[in-house]
Amino acid sequence: EPEVTQTPSHQVTQMGQEVILRCVPISNHLYFYWYRQILGQKVEFLVSFYNNEISEKSEIFDDQFSVERPDGSNFTLKIRSTKLEDSAMYFCASLRLAGASYNEQFFGPGTRLTVL
Amino acid sequence: KNQVEQSPQSLIILEGKNCTLQCNYTVSPFSNLRWYKQDTGRGPVSLTIMTFSENTKSNGRYTATLDADTKQSSLHITASQLSDSASYICVVPSNTGNQFYFGTGTSLTVIP
Image 1 (tube, each protein chain N blue to C red):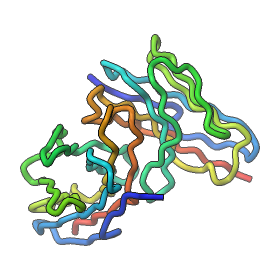
Image 2: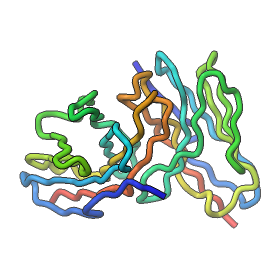
Image 3: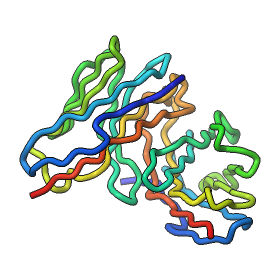
Image 4: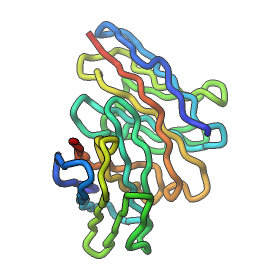
């Protein structure tokens, strides 16, 4: 069964460093998302991406964040200068086109980011 | 403001018992509502998707209901198993599917 994969599973970084979180969505999916979940809190939407551009982004997704689909398979989230409050679990998700809001959204296993 | 709220925040039940989780939403316009199961440290997994025209939908021991007039949904779990211990999250997408609004989840613990 196809699945969304994410790497690394755990990333530890120093405050102020840049991190890149990687995702490989399901191959025939065209909508991509990043979410974060701070420990003990709810899942929060960061950004959605379609046709090589951002469709929508939340207030959390400020200038420190960027997304890219560099090679047609990977979908990356970059945090330019990490802060302590960026420590969270980051989930990638994807779904097919065609009435996107009715399609099932598949989530990856997440990357746990720890900023020291 | 588009919001999804869930209750109770946490629930402990005995194995074999039933339980019902609640979800209220204010997302508008409304197209569908989803229930996800999230095991600790894992990504959410879809249990069911309900459109505005569906009142009840079952997936094994999970039965979801939707009242689009009162903007309420429930998830009923029958004959609970230890493996049902997880967080259950109610999610409502925007009508474009560009954004998904998540509830805070109900943490369910099933004890033997």
